Image (cartoon, one colour):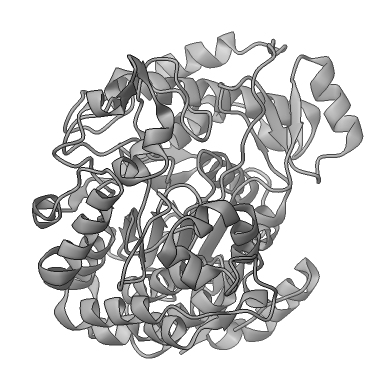
Amino acid sequence: MRRPSTLVAAALAFAAVRAWAGGAVATEHARAAAAGAEVLAAGGTVVDAALAASAAVCVVHASSCGVGGGGFALVHERDGGDVALDYRETAPAGATPDRFVVDGRPDEMLLRRGGLAVGVPGEVAGWTALHARFGRLPLARVLAPAIRLARDGFALAESPHLAREIARQQPLLAADPGLRAVFLAADGSVPGPDFRVVQADLARTLAAVAAGGRAAFYDGALAAAIAAAVAGRGGVLTAADLRAYRPAWRRPLVGRFRGRRVVTFPPPGSGAVLLEALGLLGADDLPALGAGTPTMLHLLATAMAQAFADRARWLGDPAYTDVPLGALLAPPRLRALRARMSAVRVTAPDDAFEPDAGTANVSVVDQAGNAAVITTTINTSFGAGILVPGTGIVLNDEMDDFAIAPGVPNAFGLVGTAPNAIAPGKRPQSSMTPTVLLDGGRPEIAVGGSGGPTIVSGVLQVVLGVTAFRLHPILAVAAPRIHDQAVPAVLTVEPGIDGATRAALARIGHRLVDVRALGAVSAVGLDADGWPVAAGDRRKDGGEAIVVR
């Protein structure tokens, strides 16, 4: 395991180990990266390693993800095969739109906290489907690092992100007995750095899944406990919803950018948003504009805003709505949109942007050229605010990713339309964008992120950094980022954007909002010589590992 303190140290460490490296893992915490590295070094596939790291990151970042949520996986096999698995949460059969209306008006808080906010978890179904198709080691071996980590615990000082979220969400945690018992001090206060986060019930749940697979979660005692916990908080998810849940194998979206093949996640994911933004920028001489210049950032922000506007209008669950991807991504349309992109961005006063603290990502590559990217979530921090008694399962609030009504934003300020309306069994739109960029047959980067809608902008900017600006992935991930999702009409910027650039952006009409960090991206790849590289993101406890053969 390698945890460089600076970018220079990271590059030197990479150079020192490259001669014997056989694969790479990048994710949001050193413990999770170590779990993936352990499984890869033990002979596991990239999917085995990604599952191990994903399960572990949800232990140390329990506010972000876990078996009470769901996710997406993108797998690239060196023979050229690309597969996407959608194990996104679904709306329960009883989740009709009228349930979220109070006194004749939609109540968006019902989508965010409490029983009605909970979608049917897909995480375990996704794990077992991926493992059955791509796994080599036994599932018990793959989940062993996460089980140990949950059982033995870790000092809160090891996870600054979790510590921040516990402090930020203390009232939410205090209101639920299970969350309070695990994440707060004995007196209900925010614990200090020496506090040990032990999740013994979660360890037993993971062990049950390791031994019994899908049935251990979706049938029997665990399913009954989940349904009872949701019902106790006014929700409608039932044991029948859990039994009926199935993940969906999907065909990845494929595009081209600067000579590379871009493989990314289809709806209800946001790969189409990524491809549209890349398409809008594809004919510009980006290196001549220069990374981080006002002109480049203005162009980038305008492309983001257009792509997000199309996301709001057109994207949704393809089983419930016709998503016109061919028309949206048609080169003539993109050329026409690019021609109309103004040199001036006119903004109006709007609500401030609210950065997201949820979701986690894992990226893995091996020296043979196989790659896997898993993005997983319980949506907002600590999901619906419900821990299922006796199980350690923190339940998602994924219903908030649906559009409750026209013009009503979700927790991240995103406003949806009819294609993303609530319907029983439906999967909501997602910002998750696992992506593999291929230079010939070489996975130049396999990348994904966390952070709500900033996932899309983060992945986009890392892709641009590696391709247009020829940055090493470590530098591309570390570079300061911006984000523009069209609504609210603000341009959010990280501290690394300098004052002169900010002033120039403001002069041409951007309303700037400062944030500490915009999401977190984890990327791996093979360099031009075929050696692995990993880039974790220090914005969120980032960890990366190079694995010996």
